[in-house]
Length: 496
RNA sequence: GUCCCCAUCGUCUAGCCUGGCCUAGGACACCGCCCUUUCAAGGCGGAAACACGGGUUCAAAUCCCGUUGGGGACGCCA
Image (cartoon, rainbow, N blue to C red):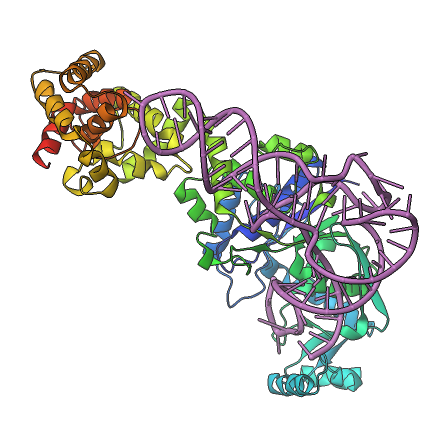
């Protein structure tokens, strides 16, 4: 039988990392088994579902390359794939259960239900519906409904136990007495989650349901429904929750959790996917952590997924991202970083080939520092936004300046630089040699002050590279004026 | 409150099912050294864990029970 899995988010907010990992595991499983990955939108919560969230979520999924071959916007023979468009279908199936006496109308009001809960809580009893309306004769119930009385349709939960074999959790079971008669159809006739889910998974011929751990308790309910309908249930795999640094469920408090934010910060989709795959799962072969999509597909194994919850670790994500970034060639990296520089209006929206090449040099100089693309803004600032007045007062810079002979080096360097009309790497090296001669300083004591003279900072990319970048940049037509070596040293000396 | 699940370095994990090869391996982060014209990067090295208590067994990280800690479910949300 060919594998069919689905990712079924509800469009009530932004896609966050927990959801994405669920989507990813579904996708990996489908790809590995040469099966079908389906996107179904569970928008039965009319009050909170919004079309913009649905669009956003599809965009996020596509960006991550977790593409579906059946779903809301591609259709297929099992559609529609939006639950709100399937309400008639649900009512049809509900009718069937009602007619077979496996479900019944319940007329209890919200207040009554709430009072019941309070009583149970006070008495130390489990919280669940008492089944009070079971005794209403079906014919009478139907008449009340026809007369316009509000009613929900509830499942008549049988006695005994429900059990299943979870692919990640192993054998799981529960006493039916733990489950109350749950709602199938709301009083407005719309389908409740568990019910819609079973009808859809059956009709869409889903073979494995891979979803969050929180759904384990729903699985028992759904199993009861499969049983009532006489449908064969799919396999189930439940995934543990992803936790934040403080051990609570990952949320906005822990930083970016929506995919859009990761994208904006400049995480590569493959890196995010790689990291998320590693959260709760490890390849059989030890020591291989940086993996491509293809490798993930080949090595993924649902039965090796961890039962215990994993903590999201930014540091490790950064490392994974950096590792993937390093695999990129210069032109690709330039292409990715350019929009960030454009966002700051540091470079034109349509750079000339000459400028493009220069940007490549810039990126090459700073790229070892990047955890994520956005970091280029921080690391390239000294090129585009040289500000000695601000930076010279920094502690590390002050330390450099207070070293013996540091100021002398800067002044000597300054004097000699001024004597040159234009500078190239050769000339710069000559000047350094002269300064060395004149001051008697060498090594760290020589280059550290020179760095300050050129960048007003105590650390940064290689000076040789920077000199070229400054000089070439100063000759380019850019939205911001790139200062040449001469101008920089001049400015620093003035601020000493 | 009731029920369920989980438990190896700070973090992600290998090993657990099928006890001995575990003096518990790898990775991130951390610390040190090397490299270096700074900071990184890179190379090398270090510190760091089987939650606790009972069993079972010649032998337990691995099997069983309990305790503790953490998480989840109990909606006309999904």
